[in-house]
Image 1 (cartoon, rainbow, N blue to C red):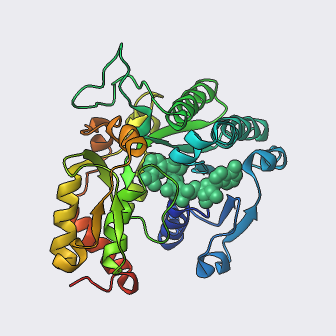
Image 2 (cartoon, rainbow, N blue to C red):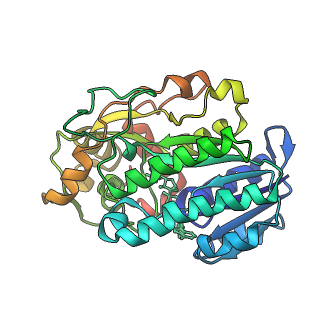
Length: 329
Ligand SMILES: NC(=O)c1ccc[n+]([C@@H]2O[C@H](COP(=O)([O-])OP(=O)(O)OC[C@H]3O[C@@H](n4cnc5c(N)ncnc54)[C@H](O)[C@@H]3O)[C@@H](O)[C@H]2O)c1
């Protein structure tokens, strides 16, 4: 089978590609080819060197014209500008997240073979509107009222995927990802970036700023569980996925203090001492508007579970990136 991963050079795109290549099979079919489409080539040389991988670089919106005549069996649509970028640059978010998603769906429709498509939406579709305050626990059927441009673009993307599925253009499934932590490498421009930074940087012996209070409660998922979720959503039978609306991937609900406790358990007092609180109202406003507890009943029906606790997520990060975690014990 031939797969397309948009955003294939990103954090989750490369991890997903590596996982699919290692499995060799998706939904009972052999993975023969994976096209990684992104603004840049993946940094992972081994991934690019795999004979089954084809790297295409450029803006997705521009690339979609060429995709109109190309049939893919499956698509993971992960390309996206991130939350803080979309707040800072409205036009960038609309182009990268909305226009490109619509153009991609049009291209897949034009190809005419009804590919299966997973769209990576986000828990950022949820927010508190004065007329519709966010409930204490968000469920699959909680009405999203996004409070950021990024959240709005993701919610519209879900609806486009649902309608193109209803029309029979694609077999689409949208999954709302929780904030993925611990993200390796350099900080990105997501408002949630510190939720990895406050662990990753101290474990590497570097200082980190925390822009929100320790009592701030958020929902998280490890990289491994998140990729497992994307694959399970792809592999689910249409009836098992249930409907065309997006489902919530499983979420571990923790406070920032819980995260720091996990950091201390793995990196000791020395690592913890590297975290400094530096309140940033703009980031706090965005993050505090996101759900603090999420129920993922539909994902559980697909056999998916949240991570057990934050310490296990930190240990997973250290096991995968020992060279970047000098302070881990
Ligand atoms: N990581 C998280 O915490 C998280 C949480 C919720 C949802 N998501 C969603 O999951 C997906 C993957 O996230 P990630 O963490 O890997 O993000 P990432 O930023 O690491 O990867 C996204 C990739 O998309 C590419 N991209 C952006 N605009 C593009 C364009 N116009 N044309 C082509 N490529 C473009 C970027 O170059 C980047 O490599 C995104 O859709 C994101 O919104 C992620």
